[in-house]
Length: 430
Ligand code: PMP
Image (cartoon, rainbow, N blue to C red):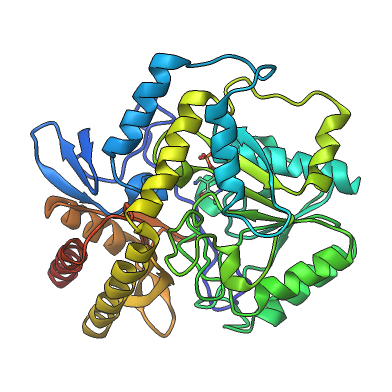
């Protein structure tokens, strides 16, 4: 939890189990069968259109089946789908170069992976080898992936399988809405200062201040001043700072391309996935030449990571972002949408908080604004109603009471109006 004594203890209620299907879950009373996607819209098997305000969990950045991305993938598929890490190929190096050009300072060495989990696993391994220290500090309510190391670093109630990982420390969550220290980032950062006297590695979700935030954890914005203070103590202790940009990076927050930029910090390692492929399985770790050299101590490789089909797609995504000015659109439509959601908050007491930046927004529902009692059942009900009205939003947060709004970055103000109307109607019906 976030250390707030007013909060009831978290109770995990496992979903009703009625058969052998442990990995299948869905949001809606009547599950959706999605068969087509076009830009910001999804279509079910009957041809009904939905506004996709979840974007495959912040993954579809330039729009479903964007023609430029499809074309790049088809062309590369016809030429060369796969070779092996021991040969060179321009589709790979061109994307690596383009990615590195978007990052500051010495962050210029790129390793490709197939997912965010793999990217974070690799980042952790690099950091551990570089520092010679096994310890990792991550945040409570964070999600970093589902393999051994990243699940160890993960501390998000719903997605936490309790596997034992030695040396992982979960620091106090600098949650401005529910946290004990409110918006005082430096107070939360003291927790990390204490931890880093014993632990030497820092794994940080970049989000925070105003822009960055947790995705799965409920689009939380880290309290102002938190990240610079944390970077300082981790660096002083000889650790490395890893920015997990898997969800908030790649133009989504609008005013910056990367979440960490909004905090004025420069990480030692940056991990990314989701949006960088617009739905194609590709992830990346970017670090400095000095840190990257630790991988030269043995032969590092990843069979499919950096597959030319995926990297050709990734490069096309980057070009579309620039050509269609999607970062600016994320800023403009995102600010408009946030403003409209804030108006909705004035009308509906159940909206406890509206937060986030660009097109990564969160709306937290509470049955009592003072006590901040999570309105879990109502969240599900509103989500279901919105789906019936043709609008799909995500859900997350420690208590499962936060709408996650992370649409493709090409949505328009009209789409944003539609979303707000649907939410308004569904809340009114409660
Ligand atoms: N880090 C963050 C911040 C994420 O949101 C996710 C996915 N929700 C991951 C890592 C893991 O990425 P993947 O699902 O591609 O393994």
